[in-house]
Image 1 (cartoon, helix red, strand yellow):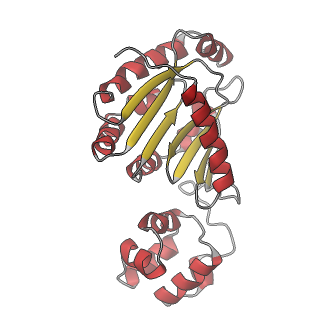
Image 2 (cartoon, rainbow, N blue to C red):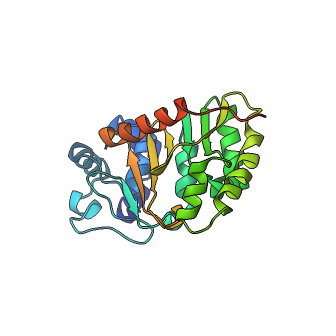
Length: 244
C-alpha cells in the first residue's frame, strides 16, 4: 500500500473518483496506485501537481515493499512467493472490479468455492451482467490423478475437484454463468477479469497453495496478460459441460 499517497489524498480532501476525473483515468486505476502500483511518469507528475506534493515523497526511489505490498516488477503488478500469502482482499477486489467478465481456470479452486463470501460476490457480479466462466479439473481424469500424485496427496486432489464442482454448481442457475470441466495439463491456474488477472504457477511436487503467484494488470502488461488469456481460451474451447 502507498501510505504516502493515501495520506496526501486525505489531506487534500479528494476521493479516488475525484482524482480519476482530474487525470482522466478509471477509478480502478487510482485504487491500484493506492494499493502500491507505480503510475506512469505523466500520471505521477499530474498527480503530484494535483495534490501539491513532491513526486519523490509520494513515490520514493527506494522500494515500498512490505509484507502487505509484495514486490512490483516491470512485468507483473505484484508477485507473491506462495498463494497462501495472497490476502483474501486481493481475490475479492479482483472479482468485485469486474464489469464484463470473470474467468477461473483451475484443477479445484476449492479455496474459493468454499468461501461463502466469494460465492456471493460471484453471484452478485453475475446478476449485474458480468459473464462468468469457471473451468475445473474433471475429477475422474488422468490429468487430475497425475497432479495429485505429483503433489503427493493421491486421490485428495480429485476429491477437492469434486467438492468444488458441487459448490460452484450453485451458480449455474444464474444467467451468464457457465461451469465446465477439463482434462488438460495445467501449467498454471488463471483467475481473470477484463482488466486484471492472477496466475498461480504449478510447481512440480508442490501444491498450488505453496507455489508462486503473479498479479498482472492488462494496461501495464498487455502482452503478458494476453498470453495467459489465450491459454485460458484454448482450455475453454477444449472443455465439456458437466451435467447439472
